[in-house]
Length: 429
Image 1 (cartoon, rainbow, N blue to C red):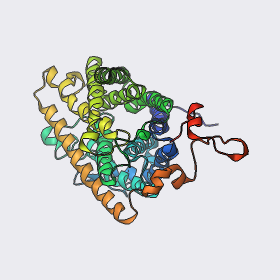
Image 2: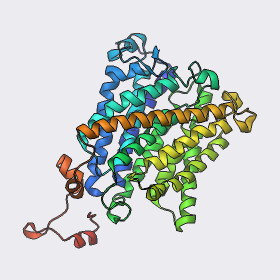
Image 3: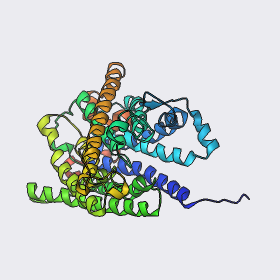
Image 4: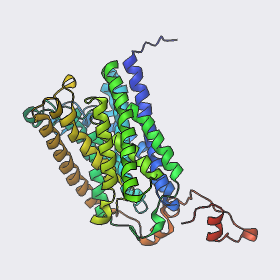
């Protein structure tokens, strides 16, 4: 038997990769509970199929696009490490696998904006194309030595954009892509007026939020450089999520007179999103501020879809784009001088704030343009959404020939009336 010798950093990255991978099934529960019962399986399938599709293309070509020699500072070569052969020879497979879990959950996040109406085949094409053309270039620009990195064309002039775990690469990109798809796909029938669009299984959503919070410690902490930094990241991840939850709950209490379970779960996620880019750069007090601001701002932002008229079904834009931008920009105020360039509140001269703001603009514009082009081609070829009849019947049945819930029938095969089902505690759309 071969003797195994592993250092602590390697073990922690392996554990962290597992935690981040678990976040996608957690997201499936989070989103699945927020949809109608006749769309729950389809919503969860969109997350699960993202794991399968990205897991394959990451090995074949996407991993090589996120590092190494780049093209104009925009993206690495898809031929740089086909099949991860170089990573295998150099012992970099663990880092490559860790990176794959980030790509998986990023594209899965987008699915929440198109619940109840997206064509599943189109989604299966969108996932690998978007990861290739949008996610990989952004990851290269920020983490792989591209435009926004210290040695990049923008970073070398304005300063490096700080994004420890994915404010720019994950949450802003997912939020912008979600907005583009929601606008191009159009609103669901009855959007804003049909009470049937409310969450059908809130306990699922609460469980999903718990799994996301659990996995987020690996998401933020997996790339920690030492135990001191890991400790800072861990406590900041705890603090921001807690503060985000309270920020959202307070806004609900003031505006509606009562807190909700969905708001509590969403506030946790908003706080986690906000601290993601900043987790290694701010103090625990800074994390509390970022968390509460992200939670409160997201609670206000989710209602904009009704005023502006776009159907972001599960508030991907309101939570991930809002908190992602806030967390990235607030680094310019709260960054500790001991962890790199100082923020304004710690004696900084504003250069970091400028670098963070420019990086946000670059990420938003790049993602919006590329996602629009991808969606335009898919709309013209495969179509983006199901028919009105299929949407009304429910995409679980029309796309998968399955149902999340099998309702009881009476004696002789006579269906139990909907009002009787409701009286027995059975949800009926």
